[in-house]
Length: 380
Image 1 (cartoon, helix red, strand yellow):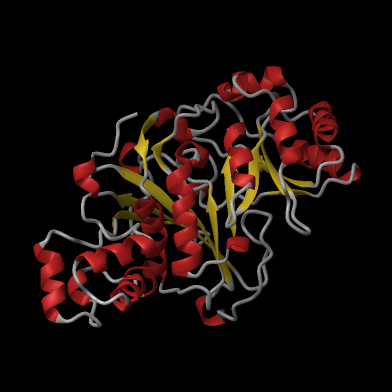
Image 2 (tube, helix red, strand yellow; image 1 turned 90 degrees about the vertical axis):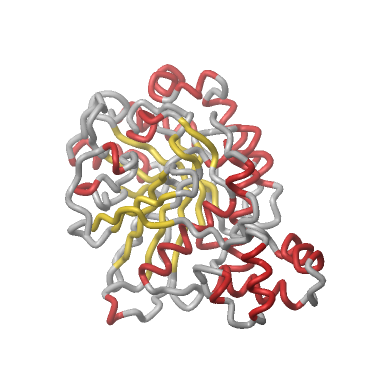
C-alpha cells in the first residue's frame, strides 16, 4: 500500500483532537482556551480557512498561516444526484487521490436506508426528509477483494487519515446545510475500503465525530468484512459505533470464493468473534448478506445462515446485488430474495431487505468506484 507521505499531512489542523490542539496552542504561547476556539472553528463551524476563525486575533491567524498551517478540508471534485435524492460525492484529497462519499436522505416517516436505523424525526419537513445517512470511506480503494464489489477492482492505494475521514462528513454536512445534533444524521462506515484495516485512523475519526462534531455513536455503524483481531479490539473501545459484519455466504466454500479473506479467518472463527463481542443493552450485531443469483441465494443457504446465527443477538440485512461493469454475477429475482428472507424470519431472526439507493449513479452498496473511472450521469 502506498503510504500517505508525511509532508502532505504536515500542519493540517483537521484531524487533530483536543489534546493535540492544546499542545499546539501551548507551543505558540497562547492561552489554553484557544484550543476550544480551534475545535469549534474546525468541527462545529466547519470553517474553510484559518483566516475565517474570527475568535482569533489577526496576529495569531497570520502567525498560523505564516507557519504553514491550514485547516485542510478536502474538496468536492464532482457531485452526482440520483432520481431518488441520493447524492454521490467524489472527494478530492490533498495528494490528488479521490474517494467517494454518499448522502442518502430519508423522506417523511419512511424506512431508514440501511434497514437498521429507525431514527427520530427531526421535523425537517420543508427539506423533504426527516433524517439522513452519510456513507463514509476509510481507504482509497480496498484490499479485501470481494468478488462482487466494484471498489475491489481498484485495489488499495492508501489509508485515509482521521482528518480525511472526518472531512468527508464535514463536506457533506456543509453541502447539505445540516448540523448535528439538531438534524438527525446517521453515519455508516461502509464506503470505499475496510475500516478495520485502517483501525487507528478510523477510531480517532469516530471520537472526533462524537466529541467535536456532535454525532452520537448510537447513530453510527461500521461494517467489516471480518478482520477478527480488530473485532476483539473494537469491543474494548469506550466510544464505538454499532457493528455490522459482511457475511455474504453460508458456508466456507462459497465465502472463500466470494471473499478471499475467509481463507485467513474462517466462518467458524468469525462467528465465534461475533458471539464473544460485548454487546450493549438491547444491541444486536448486523450481518449483511449480498444475494447473488444462483450462488448464495437458495433457501438451503438461508437455512445454513440460521444455523450459523442461532442464539446470537443479531439481525440480517439482505442486499440484492447492485450490478456494475466488471462484476460477473447477476441480481436475484424478487421472489428468491423474499424466499430467503422468509426462512430467516420464520427462524426468529429479524431480517430486512435493504432498498437500493442511487443505483442510477453507481452510489448503491458495492458500487463505489472512483467517478473518474466510470461513465455515469452528468454531474450536477
